[in-house]
Length: 328
Ligand code: NDP
Ligand code: MG
Image 1: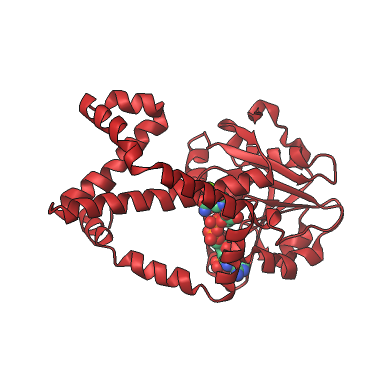
Image 2 (image 1 turned 90 degrees about the vertical axis):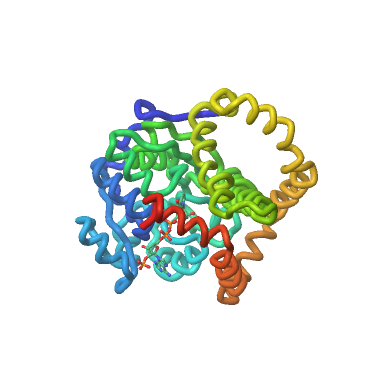
């Protein structure tokens, strides 16, 4: 595996280039500000009348329409939600791309599944932080950064990887290390992670644990602390010191109980289902489902959001987080 650090990356390759960051949300704000603060030439492309236009102006960014930004730029870094990138690209970016330009992403989704196809002679690269925008910005200001990824799908100019690495360095990612990957690997692992482990897996685990305790007659507040609040403390230990460090810090009773019971929770059947989920991602079945859902106006997502809001753990959690001063 190849990891690039500050000393390995020369931002000189971007000296005469203009980077248009399209979008000023979670990633767009953090990445465009970091790159500008690092001395790179950055403009921000947004739709006029959108809510982030004024925010970007107030932050002192050079804001223009998406079309003008695409015209001006050598590198168009597309940081708007994945499900609208294809349409915005066709209408407002593609017509202005010239040979030798670069389109760049922080997630491989649209390139990997073919929703965006670059014209001949245009580089396709990825520069992606492994974390949310707020953290990208905060750690940069603290003088450090979070780890990142770099990938090249099309290298038309011969220096596509150097360009993408330099953008990552401008974001502060080379301070923590930039790993080399491919569009396929990044897209498929990212989707799998968020579905099976991070967003999907972990909420279902919490939900099931909470419900088991409440059904067992215990106070919901106690159940919440046990199955949700404390999860962060355990995950922080694993994040900092690995499984071994976590097992060392919890009691021997917790260690014995955890090690003897965990495979009864995440059973071999659960692992078979994980493999099935991965297959749906690899075969493009998930992407197709999500595209159809968007075309239909997201009826399923809306319904699931409503059901999620109605969960008892959300009600109890919100009350407790306010009482503890964690939430306003
Ligand atoms: P956001 O949802 O935060 O993007 C919001 C921005 O997109 C706003 O500037 C908004 O402008 C603009 N936008 C929304 N809809 C449209 C539209 N129809 N036309 C034009 N502009 C629009 O996106 P993220 O930062 O979360 O994600 C950007 C990319 O980064 C994605 O590829 C994502 O996968 C990737 N990524 C995200 C991470 C994260 O933590 N969020 C982590 C790693 C990668 P307006 O104000 O006008 O609505
Ligand atoms: Mg991810």
